[in-house]
Amino acid sequence: MDVYRMASMRDEFERVASNLNLHFNVEVQNWSAPDSSAEVDINLEKPVAPIPQSLEDMPRLMDIVTDLWSTGDVVGYLYQLLCDNHGGQRVGFALPVIEEILFLIELKETVNRMEIAK
Image (cartoon, rainbow, N blue to C red):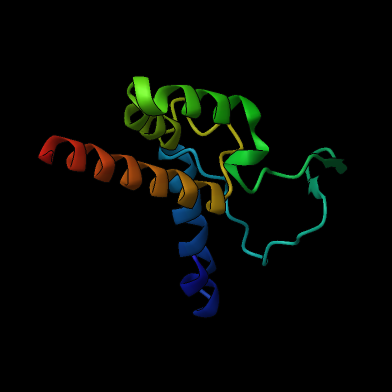
């Protein structure tokens, strides 16, 4: 997305951003650089809660991941979190959360391979 911004390719940026949100549970990227202050819903023009920037900011999800880590299909659950099953109607996860989810998937798959090799 940053490459599109740097190349001033706004139409392409907006098309890809919209497509990402339709297929993946990732927040819609805005053309203007993100601001760290409280976000404003431009349709309602009122402050909205900031999007969590870590899985730790979402205790319910952390509890599920923790419970599934050793006893269930945590990888399947994490993949499910990445995919949008609401037709782009959710705000989606911030990119740092997506990175954490991908890291946990890779970590658990590595642990599983090591346990099989024993």
